[in-house]
Image (cartoon, rainbow, N blue to C red; front, side, top):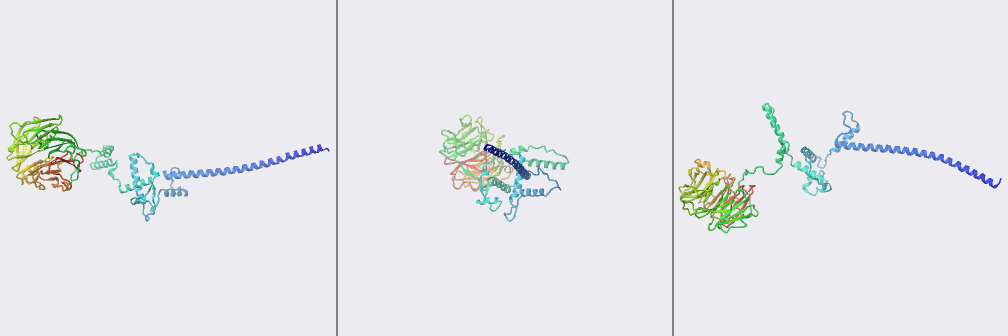
Amino acid sequence: MSLISQNADKVKRSKTSDFDEPVEENVEAKHRKEINSDKTRSRKRKKGNKDGEFDIEQEKQIQKLENVLFGSLYSPIEFGNEDENEEDDRLEKTSALFFTDRSANSNMSVYEEDAEILVTSDDIEEGDSRKAVWVDDEEEKASVNIANVNRLRKIRKKEDESLISGSAYVARLRAQHAKMNPGTEWAQIDFRLRSYNSDADDSGEENGAVVDPGFEDVEAVSDILRTNEDLVVKGGSKLLPGLLEFSKLVDANAEEPSNGPINSVQFHRNAQLLLAAGLDRKMRFFQIDGKRNTKIQSIFLEDFPIRKASFLRDGSQVIAAGRRKFFYSFDLVKAKVDKIGPLTGRDEKSLEVFETSPDSSTIAFVGNEGYILLVSTKTKALIGTLKMNGTARSLAFTEDGQQLLSSGGDGHIYHWDLRTRTCFHKAIDEGCFNSSALCISPNGTLFAAGSASGIVNIYNRDEFLGGKRKPMKTVENLTTKVDFMKFSNDSQILAICSTMKKNSLKLIHVPSLTVFSNWPPAKTTLHYPRCLDFSPGGGFMAVGNAAGRVLLYKLHHYHHA
């Protein structure tokens, strides 16, 4: 055998051997792949089983939380069929909803009680269907240390509690406020409807009939109670005796003080305009606000020192008089000054004492020898006279303008009927020999009479006309001649003053007939007071003195000027 044939033989054998070995290897590889695929399938099955169990557990946890928050949604309770797992679930739910506070000697925490209050208030708010206008997002981020502040320690739930979130702090404060200030039944919105229905039911049962309430306008009542506007403006509140609450404001005539004594101050009916007049022959008008008191206008009357100036009650004119045979009339609408007089048939040299009627129809001047001169406000002509036995010194109109009171040197008080111009009652003022001042309360029930000795008698007018001569009260706080008296518009304060002594001004509480002990102010001087007036609402009091100032005070009892 040649070498080539031998080599070929080897090649054949090597090819056959090389071919036989891969076949065995392929069989083994297939077997391994089958084993591996079985293992991966078992792993996937195990993994799938684990994932399913995890999903089931997760779903159970979600259902648990939903049941805790919203009740049994998925598995309603059936009595008698509960298993142990459901019993355990219910125990877990109850333990999540309630807790026991063992921080303060095993006593129940106040916050468990406050939770009931908050639930009630939440129910009310839900019934009212109101929502919060604004929510602060920073409350959750903020933290409050309630252990450092003594007054905040009461809202702790545990003794060692210190830092809490802002929202928890707000909730606890609300709970504490609800505990300290429990809500009242009448403040609930539906209280009136419920009370009305109950009253209607009771009345129906008693009468044997069914009554239809017919009133369900709760919203209207709610709207009224939600506003702070004045529904009815009236001074019906009672002023207390003893101490008068007041404060000093900027002088009413601070922008232009008078160069002489102030003889008249008076508020206009609109409560904003103040008239001040005196011996410097000027009438000044100020807009009163208590801060600036701006001067509006001043009128100079040549060679006419003003002894008295007064608005007509309707506010259309100002009458100014002095120690002259004539007087002036200033029309506020036309801004025109008229000089009137002398009066026809009269020779009076002074018309300084006068009063205007409440109906703005008549001006009554004090004349000579006990005469009272009646002048029409329209024609400015003399329309009649009244005659006293003694000299006439003071006058006062009743509120209806149909009667006139007068007093003078004989110590008697006269009551005149202006319709018939006759005296229908005359009586002596007790203890008075020389009357100097007279005024009537706006409600017409009282009048006060002052004398040259400083005595002021306060009478009930009906009793005085009925024959009772004894006064209700005799005020002896002044020691010199009573020159001026004035009732407040609600008849609760009577001011009396004398021009002959400093600080000689007293305020009397009319219902109790006592003098306010803190007036005049101790640390301020009124100088020599000469006149006074109250604003229509009672909130301001203006005092004119001999120094040319108009002092302005605010009376805190009254809410309107």
